[in-house]
Length: 307
Image 1 (cartoon, helix red, strand yellow):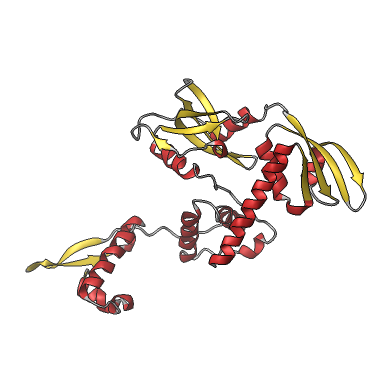
Image 2 (tube, rainbow, N blue to C red):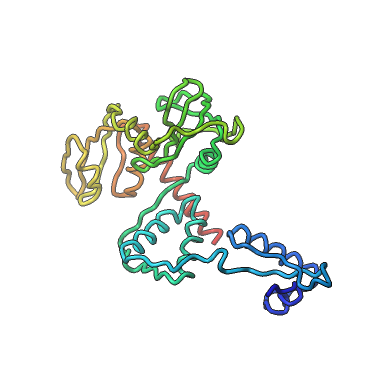
């Protein structure tokens, strides 16, 4: 049975607390929009055929309710892990909303079983969100891009997909300037991403796998230099396994010589170890690590001030 706005106002405590009829109308319209955005159909019907100007509102649960949902324990763990992986990324809110819907459907999410596992999908690059939207809309974009040697130029791309590889985000697509498929690392995009075409202007090649394309273009990259790192004993095991040579020093430190093909990527890795790894050479690696640690300190300090 449809309910009139007056009936709904008396039945919902939040509506009863509105200061005026105008305030209630604004809240009611906002809530209707939110219901529709969530995919919940709100039916509008005439309450009385003799008074066709009086409308009633009704939600038919059969139109949107899902069948009973059940998951195996390992599937629940995977869902919880996926939501936690996106908690600091641009899709954090949709991930949280999905988990709320599962809980409301009676799915028990056991976070305790995930103690000790802390995945994080990082999308801190400003280019991520506009590129994600462009991929969804199939819309060409333009952006400034600098190569490892520091040369920057404007690129025009029909983006096909986004993928993460070894902690870095990449966009794959058709490079319109070079008339061929290319991969671009998001951290090297040094301008705002702007749209340069209309949505739906192209089709993504059938069977395109952005992750495989990124891996195939990055895996064969040659070594470009060797870094000298000072590593605390018991730390930096990933670096130790890749080290060309290791020299043990007194007072609990080792010196590692590690080959690399990307200064920025190695700087991210070294900075992630905090005080346990110190970049000694080359100078550009040391400077890159200092910039990352300084930026992390600034963000942490800002968070303390504003909290």
